Amino acid sequence: PLILALSDQNSSVRRAVIQALGRLGDNRAVEPFILALSDQDSNVRREDVVEALGRLSDNRAVEPLILALSDQDSSVRWAVIQALGRLGDNRAVEPLILALSDQDSNVRREDVIEALGKIGDVRAMEPLFNFLEENMDLQNFDNVAQALKKIGEKNNEQIVLYAFLRMLNDDNKKNFRHFIYYKSSSFKSSYGYGKFGPLGELVNSGEVILLIELLEQKNK
Image: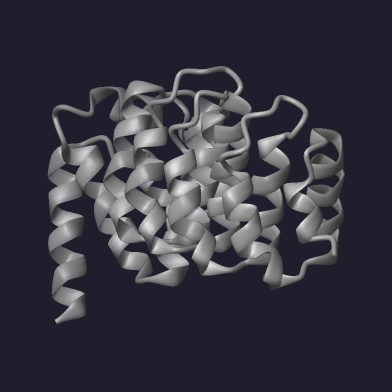
């Protein structure tokens, strides 16, 4: 009966039904929720639909949610980013990478970074590093480092290490290199001397190249 009420003419009823079905967590609501994404009535908060789809963890919602990343309402886009992160489907990686350039203040790019980390796809590494180069500060660095850590845990931690080293050795990434140099004390206190810590000192490109060679030899 609740699902049928999603087609009620009263938009306030539809909104209440969406919230109730979201709390129930019944996957039979996935298809009706997908249809509800196109409800343009201002009383029906589409971000509530998106949030409910994210909680249901049903991959049928992935493609419709990806389409909703282009919604004109920034609140909807923000909710979609969080839902896609919860779903963790690799199909969302490229669209989320594009969302890193969303300049609307309601779309928090730290949520995009977190979603990419949750998905854990290595395709996100280079765009995350590029984002850092263009938006370098301690908060962004911390957010990206946490995302990269999750990507490494889901794949091969040395993949992230190599990518980090290449960034330090890239003459086009001078902001990144200088930031690591001047923030090395904060860097080490946050990450210790494990995966990332010692690299805070590596601003000499020759040392970086040597380390890459040593790591490659170790893997043979």
